[in-house]
Length: 423
Ligand SMILES: CC(C)(COP(=O)(O)OP(=O)(O)OC[C@H]1O[C@@H](n2cnc3c(N)ncnc32)[C@H](O)[C@@H]1OP(=O)(O)O)[C@@H](O)C(=O)NCCC(=O)NCCS
Image 1: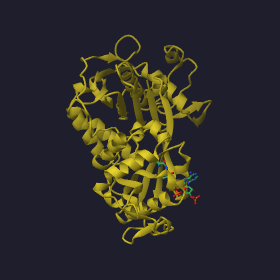
Image 2: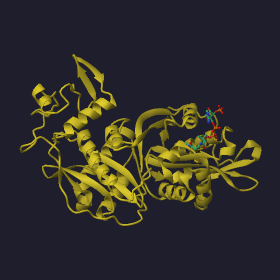
Image 3: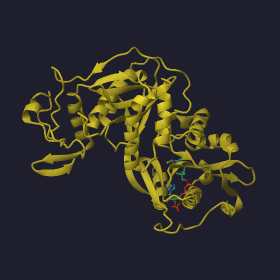
Image 4: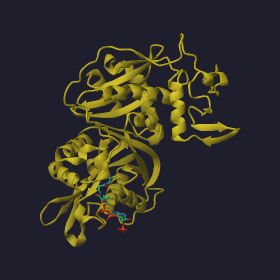
């Protein structure tokens, strides 16, 4: 399952443009914000006791490092829990004097620098080349089709969030605030505030029945409070990686590839490369494989044939989950009936990193090493195409898939959250 599938490729109708509004931070009264965590030389320092007094309810809150999420307590360092980090972000957000404007007042050029910085963070944290997604997003900003907010710090753009709304469903595709040293507010605090504004707007939108979001870039718990406060359920997800570097990775158990015909279950099934004509059959297989599945709760595209079809089109045609790699994507066919029984779709998230965007096997054929063989085939293809590792995302509650990936050597590199709100 991809990190998110925002349907950016296929928005259905133009959105209502709200009146221009300025929402100022609910900050301390009186003029320009003096940020208490910022020293003159740009080093983050603990706030003073005087500062605590100015934050109702926060008097007992110890200092947490705004960037490193470490907690200073009696001279000892320990990692702050997500709840502690969130509480701190909200305390900071409450002091900010930023402006929050409707995203549709802005043009792509206004946001380009911020998205370049966000792309750098995707590269640093996940080795993910986010630039084509960012370019697509900027096109949509120019079309004024996205619902969202931009944060301004002394008239300069310092953050944004966006969502795609389609009839009764909205998908929050991202939130990001600058990490630049000159920023007068910690990024997590600005992001929390942006999410507050967006969620408040969405929750007051008539007819909206469902909001989904997967914030792959942020570690599990980072924006939990904003979503939980708005009534969302959270589903932890994992970002896993397998080393397939020709020099360092161990040889795969079986050197599968469809250069040599691969048959399974004594010739009853056969694996072949993905073809454009597989769309319809793959759609049916995906919908059947995800019936009553945890991922259908998180992403309702899995719940219907029409939804699975949109999901497939997004994966194959648009770069939200990397550039589709037809040469590493494959299907399993029943040799007698020709019916499609399993599918694996692969993409590239950077020149040397492959990504599994989808793998599923028909329910009646599970536990016969079909999924395992598909993953081995894809890893071999990606290795031959110059990739040094393969990544994927999986819901923490999906034990079957996690056991499969772990057996093949995938390791968790990062955990993040999927969020869901239903009316
Ligand atoms: C996950 C999925 C693709 C696995 O396919 P599969 O063909 O049944 O898996 P395999 O037979 O190749 O399993 C290989 C190994 O994975 C592990 N595994 C697979 N399914 C398991 C299960 N239900 N429980 C425990 N371990 C499991 C086992 O270690 C197994 O080896 P073993 O049978 O020798 O013990 C399949 O269950 C599926 O389609 N699920 C629904 C869609 C899905 O969740 N996709 C993944 C989204 S991230």
